[in-house]
Image (cartoon, rainbow, N blue to C red; front, side, top):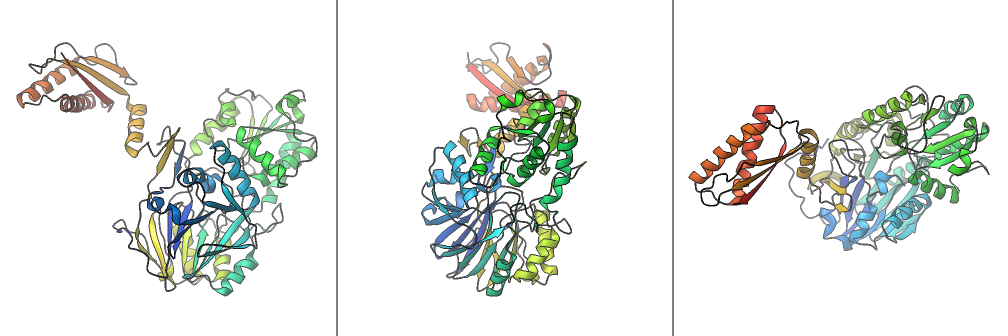
Length: 561
């Protein structure tokens, strides 16, 4: 099994006739999925998503894949193929199109509709190519065939990429629900047919590779959702991802069955459900969905609200309801249904929301106490089925943290894939398929690119570290007036303090520290204001740590007297 090594060198040029595969995101994390394929001098990109920030990344809106390695080759990109419409697969497209706006974007009907609505907000009109399962299209030297897969959003596609170097089959995000609500199952017949032809490299979704057995069918949630609608004494507030059309369909059907009306809350939810309804993916019984104004006139037991915020995102509707910062006032007898998963890393934020809602008297139904969520990803049993059907010559697990990739690789080996042909790569690791054998060839830069308000890539690890310091330790600005001739203090320094616990006398001992630092500097002939500022900052920071065990951010300002 070939693993990436930290001492990997930059990758050499691709061998003639070979195929190069580089994931710029999605390997080693859940999110920002983006894979670049290179063959015959051209590039094909599959997916371009975002990753949502954690608590250690304050002020960051989303995290993008790093485009550095393709930036001087933008003209070589023949297309961006999108497997499905989730943010972690399409969220980065606006930022890629800012760099070259006419890259053809390929996807299914719903995926492109979600993308176009997103691009409108960025003021971009994309060149789109609509495909559906069974279609075969060529983009430069890449011959792409699209295969239906089932996922937690309709219209998901896997893509088989035929090249002179061999065929790659990329599953995208998928599971094998045998009774999907839209009756569109993962096309295993196509997987088998491609397997017969010969799959040289199989890229498979690893998210649930550690979970034994099979992922439960979406339909099995019906009884739990129906029970909530039947037994809730007052309003039902449902929270779900704004793109989970199938889940919301079940909510609408159950609400309708029990004489409730439904309103959508939250911009992304209203937008996406409008699109899904228009395109016929969401079937809405007439008169069921009403506006907030009409809803307010109805008795409580006839009300259902569908909103976003299942991940405890601070601005999403549900968190605001929990914090009493929303027009919808949660009260005794209300039922809140969290119809979604817990994204790893967000658990504490979600439990905070659950506690907040419970405090106002709501009954919170979530996957911990009822069957109201199933995953959108194939479990180990389904992955093993795929390996046995496809019989791939080489495999490369994608979409997951390292432990998921490793678990997926182990499954492939157990089905008989040669361990020497199993490649566990991480973001930026270059995998070359040459003469039918996939091997790690080197690496390219693939760091996190932070989007912060309107700036892209401006926030760095260092500035985030400063933000965390500001949040945890506070900031001290030292204003010192220094006599230009003697290099000594001309007046007592001022300390402007935020977030550092202090009183009027706290910083008195620091004055002596500053005086000592300046005297030493004068002795050594250091008179440059910038150098003096650095010295004072270091001296005050180490004094604060010795005296208070705190590490505030120290900003020195020196004024010549």
